[in-house]
Length: 425
Image 1 (cartoon, one colour):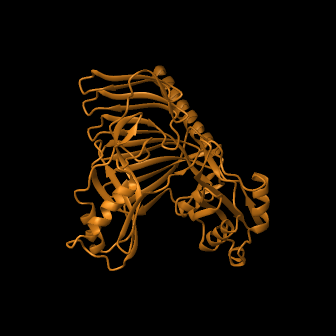
Image 2 (cartoon, helix red, strand yellow):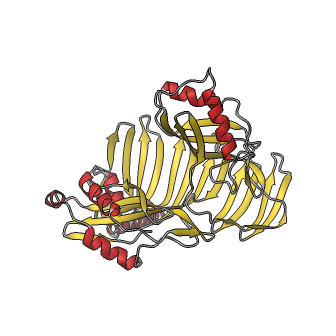
Image 3 (cartoon, one colour):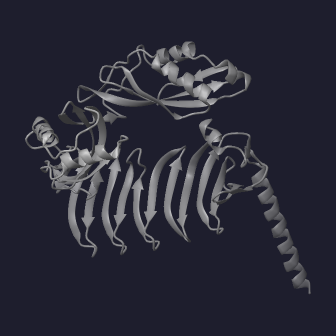
């Protein structure tokens, strides 16, 4: 009897300690979850809970109508109060909440994809086959830093390598489904120093050398113009027309697919299909001098029967010499501080938040392609765009000594008593 009492007392003490620890974890969080922790959605159910291992993190989970979890995301929360019933996008737009940690997507009872974020930046992505076998483990899409691994459906490793600062660095290996080594190359700072090139057989959107017509672009344009002038060719209702196309080439340079990025009528689609039908193969795109499949955005202009196909000029995000606002970062901040006018109606309604505006600095330094990529409210969004349109020309960005187009994103933070602006990142 004495032994039972001791065991019961120890168990009770352990439960008390456990409750105190749980209470302490909630009490030490830097924010408070208010309102319902579960809400119904058209897709099922959304829940929120504290991260028991971190005082400034929370988990948001989504469940389908059958009660199975679809996703679970870990967030860093910088605010004071969190409510699941609030518009979650507003928390993100105001930078109060960013993905930080692991996001898991489920398909049925198995994990389909797992993402790891650091302060909103994707640093690793793992994907899985339908049977739960790992398919890939790759560094974040924004910057290649770390191990890059792919597996065959049978579980055998198919590709392995390590990237440093978006460049191959170390051993790269390619295996067949039996595990036999097919190719091996050793790289240093992106350059092959031993072995042979190891290039994945995937479709590349930014190959080192894009697909080109062997006889030159002008010759291919003459070919298209001739096709458009044939008696059986479909005639355009508008003789002056421009189409944005996304063209896929295989490893031999053959055009295998074409997608329009512009709105077009059915006759216009038939016109494009007709002039490209049976067209000669291009010289294929290459990576490390190895032919690869590729996708290329191109512009097709039709002017009074003259057809021209021109590659869309690449827009960079990181170059040797980045564009610069006249006078530098501090001058940009002064320009924004004196140029931004907080909309009166927005101030009256206490509308505030951070608007992210993207734009492209052209080769001559002019500002083009301005758009809101993350808005707050139409009043604030419009003002942010207006200010960016009034910016003077930058000194253009340069790659290998040549001026190129460079994309920027500028956050403008509107607060009730004024505006605080940050430099582009």
